[in-house]
Image 1: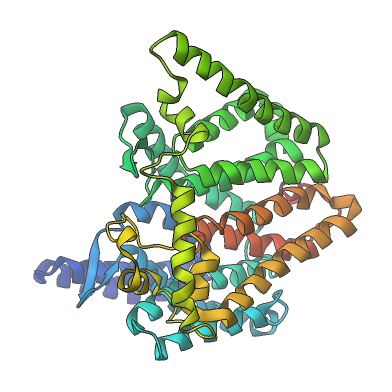
Image 2 (image 1 turned 60 degrees about the horizontal axis):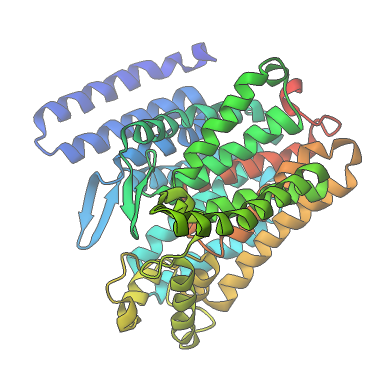
Length: 469
């Protein structure tokens, strides 16, 4: 393979020399970065070929560290490094898909993804903020493309799911290391009165929390549900990994992620692990039954309160000044009248923050965030009832086909147990968070979903693909 690509070396060398000379002469650093990125992109495409998809997935979580670095600014629109990577992916994808046009039609519900793509980009024609709609549409279509290309990559043996898993684990090194450092040094951030929230390499603790949740799902499957030979031989490391991920997750103070983990445990418990289900419900119920009388007793007899501990306070109390549950309920109530003004097609994809800021009441005038914190509410406002219906049907297909595979592949149910739980969590937490805005998580998650759906056609009698690739 390398010998076949040697013919490109002179051209790459010449291109590199040109880029180097421009970098030395040109005083504008942003142009230098763009040219360097183009050069690296070209090298990657030449030598990695279709496997360059893994490179995109690998660098996305780490690149978020430099999310505030602006390459291009047009009026109030900024193109940062993350946006540049999103644009690069959507430009590279046709090179990949052109080779496998016959396989595209075999991708599950690709017609639905196509309809969503047309609607989102089409919304820029009537959007209140056309450029915003185009940029946000690119981000969403990248997610769909990752699903499609991962599906094709597994089907065509471009790479294996073991390769994809390895890529994801390597991509987690920087975020997890950053999170551990913030935990040790107390370097978290404060949001809505909650201090010390660790965020890894991401823009917000919520993004890091769902990234950790993603890793926990994978770890649960490959170390516990269908353990590989490695985890069978390293039980202490398996437990230590659980402890590390859970501690990091707790210290993000993201209640939606806590709920997501609870839903995951309940789901897999209902499917296969009844003891886990009973223990989880029993421990949670026991904690709350014991905590409040105990804390009342301590408060009456001492000057202390267990709710002074931030983590305990987060899961046992609601702050009157920063009550996220009540705030979300009020947001829904005040958004519904805005939606009714344009209920079918909405105001343009990605425009919720701007439309909300223009129409919000005095109560929300000084809010820290103008985001919906609810993907369904956001899509209803942005692309109307039609777009929301298409997205719900897409999620419905994910749930249906995964549960169907679990029920009818009796010899291989372990392969789908965690996946059912994962997708159910995704559907549920989208009610309380901006999941589609968490692009570092969405990239990896939808790429994994695409690979998982393709895997239904391969190794169907194995509960653990890692032992067979």
